Length: 185
Image (tube, rainbow, N blue to C red; front, side, top):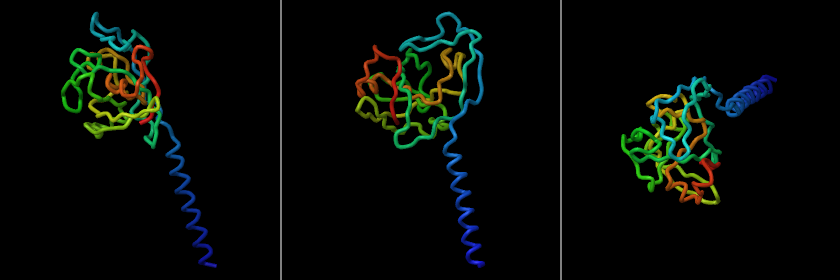
């Protein structure tokens, strides 16, 4: 009888642990806050690659997290220039350098960037029936924006892979046709 009770108790504990784990895994990345947009000073927001500029008084959602990365996590691929004078703004956060548009590099949303833990690591991006490896060199800040540090652009959504022209070319995504497309990482 005691053995049967122990087995049932262990099974219930196991079931509770699995249920809790599945509940945690099922949670999504929820917004962490909002910021109000400020009008950029004249000529201060670089709109290369159809980049958005903050709008005075508009509310922008911020995120401290990104969706969990699995085998093929869905992401939105955006186009960015990491060159000096490009819409990426300052040098890349990981190495304090600018990168040629012909080099496959990316900036990841804050959660995926993971406090620089992904710096200078390669990720594989899948899209359009193709794949490309790209080096993570920067963060697409999901927690702040609309200031000079962020080129007066809004905060990034939490599922962005901001990629150089080389990545778009490797995936054969025509940059003149779309500003963003869905991919997996």
